[in-house]
Length: 420
Image (cartoon, rainbow, N blue to C red; front, side, top):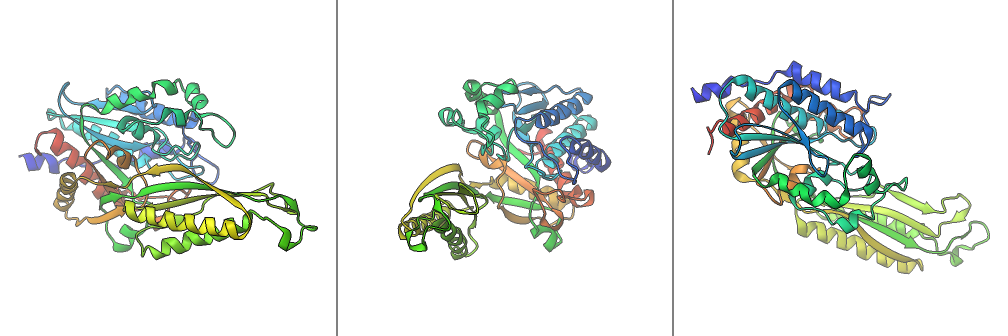
């Protein structure tokens, strides 16, 4: 009877597709992408859309000090399992990153309510603010606020590239930076957190598999390098007399690739931002700024790669008569997923005839921030062509069907008291 109740729990894919299509119109761009940056009107409209969909189920929702949206079903005072993801995007991003996880949580709630079976435990859906960090460099903002809290003094200095302070953007959405610490109360009664997400890579598709169980989420450390030389005329300044800040910056970019390659696949390194100042074709750059991001599921490896890059930057700066300053802009520790919850996900996948693949996530996720406080687990579904953070990001419903079903049944088994 209990196994039958679970096997009858089947997501309605047409309903999920409608949710994704309607959500995808919010912040839609002409080229097919979506832009819903943190604290923007578009992100606010996406959250309002979720609240409206929940209201159709008779489920109320509320927002915390970090503007995370929360909604729950189940008996008051009972243990809580949290599920969810995020609704913000990168500029001109895709329609599935984060969004599928939130819509999967919404569909799971629908299925539990429609089943008519009394819940013994509560299920709480979360839509976290600013997972991407695309505007202020404050990735995992909402999930970090509820998990471990933020350094408010640091956040008070944060501005976007247009000069808008984070505190101003929050105030425009009715939130105060000084009250952010109270958001941690939202997890006081939560026992664990589960998240379904598109893989954002090609591994599942290449293996012909539809379900991946995440073993660990990569750590991320972003360091900004500023090289200070001397601005001068590009024609009248002899090569021997130059203190060209861009030269050691360029050598450092190459050092990032070499250091990552020497990790033997245990780390990746990226320079995604470079600026030469004053930025004129006929001026020797007196300053160069670049971002260095290293990711690894192993803290020691991440530190080793960053150390090698730093030594290379300092050596090249000395060689070219330039000064260099480093500043850590973002750091997230690697996060291991909970073995017991991973096994629950595997069990429901195997009941569907699927053999899930264990995968490390090389993308950061809200689950990674929450792992500092709770047992967490993640389930991946394929991304077509491995494409993500781009307008072509797509996962067909037949490719996320099994993952969503295993996810919903894992939540249901716990909520109905069929799992310890």
